[in-house]
Image (cartoon, rainbow, N blue to C red; front, side):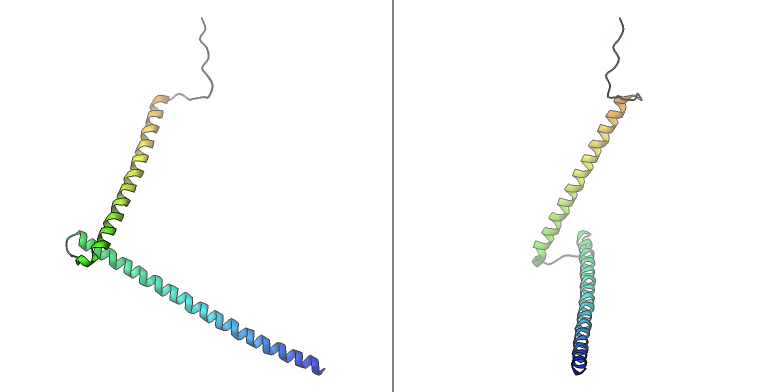
Amino acid sequence: MKQIQQAFQTAQAQLAQLREAVTHTAELARLNSRGNSLQMEKEKALRELGEAVWRQVQKGRLELPSLLAPQVKAVEAAEQRAAAHAAEITDILQEGEAVAARLKGKNDGRVQTPLAPKPKRK
């Protein structure tokens, strides 16, 4: 009986330790999650600030120091690449529309079948 009681007390102590470890881990996870959320909030605010500053620079209302010239050039290059990419997509879409229009005009309302036309009788 004494051994069973000792084993039960040991199990209770281990359970208490486990419960404490789980509580500690849950608290760390909650704090980590909150930290990630705050970091994302900060990054969003910085992104919005940067975009607002860039709009003012483009409008000529704000001049950035020459120290930021590499960053300005990087933004300009990224904008040029994005514009070229958009133009490429527009070209492809226009080509597709042109092909569709040619096929529609070629069809002239007739149903196309994969069969060869019937031979003409003499």
